[in-house]
Length: 303
Image 1 (spheres, rainbow, N blue to C red):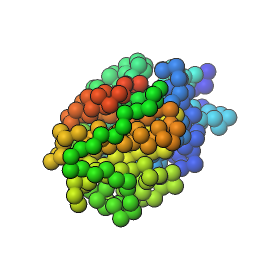
Image 2 (image 1 turned 90 degrees about the horizontal axis):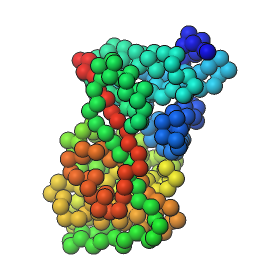
Image 3 (image 1 turned 30 degrees about the horizontal axis):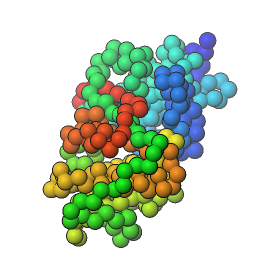
């Protein structure tokens, strides 16, 4: 069997997204028996990963991708995701990538190192726990299937739900940042960074973005993506504190459901922190969504 010393470790480039997606897909098939992670699902994360430092693409002697380690960092928080093709298990590749990730974070002065894994990947859990990582969070992907038309959007007294307009960009960005302030792991983007990362990307469809207006004030927003996981996808849903508890979140969600159903999407999904303090998981369940997959985040203090 090929050993780690026979593999090539190099920095990935933007064009390697297809090759990285191959590795993620192979691992997901081995763990879950299905593949949901492809290029469309990886694209947003790929733009956030630091491909120039702290990330590696691993290739075998033929040049085929067999492993990947992706790094994302904000301030002193470093997040990694490592994936290895199942046929390359047992040769120490995951161990090597995790060691590289940890050393990179230490050299960069990180306070903590987080590592994600697919729930059910017991090999990854064993490795992380053996290196003094502890489980700190779980994230769900929840989904609603359109076997029948979704419920019509609900009206909320005093609130008007309208589609995003270009002149709404700054208020949309501010509302998202304020709605998510204090959430676990959230790092606010500057407007210019958000504009480049979200608004100006070629795959962005702002006709799938909506704002809940209370007069001239934005009470909440929802940002959706065209196609992910085989259907529509809600990238972010946030309601500002003064307006919570009035049904604005579910009104925005149902607005998105109606729009995706009109466009022929078979289902809509989203990602959510299982311990979200605003009760988002319960909101999504009331809207008819169910958990379809789960990821786990581990953390190690190194500061």
